[in-house]
Length: 270
Image (cartoon, rainbow, N blue to C red; front, side, top):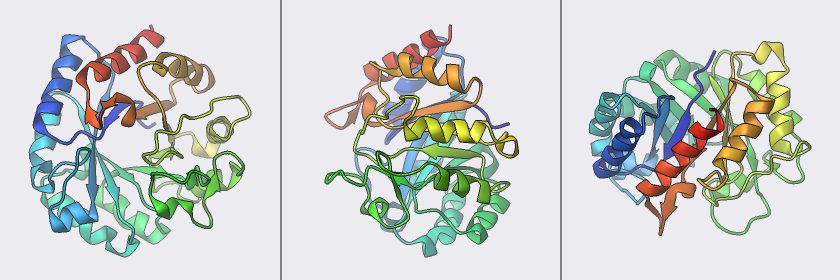
């Protein structure tokens, strides 16, 4: 069974990680906390960074300190060209990332089964992002998620997304439902929403019982307790949540918001 976790993503520098570590231990958080580091093919091969993405040269150091704090590393990998995935992952390993101790979130269009089999052989714990998007939104996000074969979060169907997961059984550890792709779209958790239909279809399928659910999109300090209680009622011991934009102010990580987010989750399950 996949580990359930809470994730803070978009951490880009040492000072941010140190602050999160102090909050985690100072508030006696206790539950598994994952730190998401954005890594792109461009950052790997051209040395770029941004407020949500560290220098690739610092990834190994950040990973070591993450583990020292008792936290878990997730590499959020993005490329427009699936042909470069394997070469980039080798460079990530060479940078000091141990696959067996790392969550790998593929922010790419669904990989082929052959590619996923190779990634699985490397030992990564794979978070597979199903092909869903707010295709009507003109702003933000990766344009690649607007294309054919991607379900629209308001008018699409959950069944093709469940099929994507079932087809990759044995090659992935988590199925991620995140239609926002950086737009801070708030997820609809109404009983008839695609998010809930997808989750129920996964947990009600005995063949998928080892697949963890990860939800992201608009989760923030102000709603994390409500969303956590709702997900716990529907999928007890089966879900994880991730936030990125929800704990930022002026596109910079805000440790005060991180603290509120973590305590809000903790309170919801007490």
